[in-house]
Image 1 (tube, helix red, strand yellow):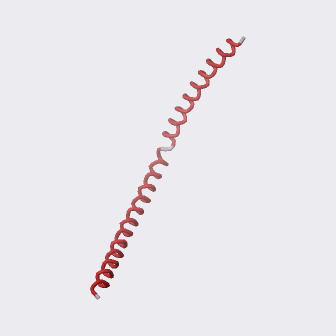
Image 2: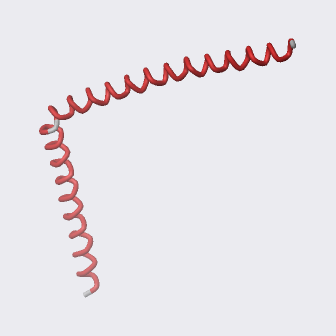
Length: 81
């Protein structure tokens, strides 16, 4: 009797696993087909956000360099007095 349960569990789990794999593949294919137009818009939005972040970081870098220059000038003037 235990052997029947073991065989049923093994084959049942194999069938369920195959079904899950096929279902997952079908969902992925459908998402790619239906989301192609939305994906373009999303990637454009992401590209714009990344460009905006890059510009902001460049401005921040310039400000930090200016502050470093001011601090270094202040130290140099303090040493000379």
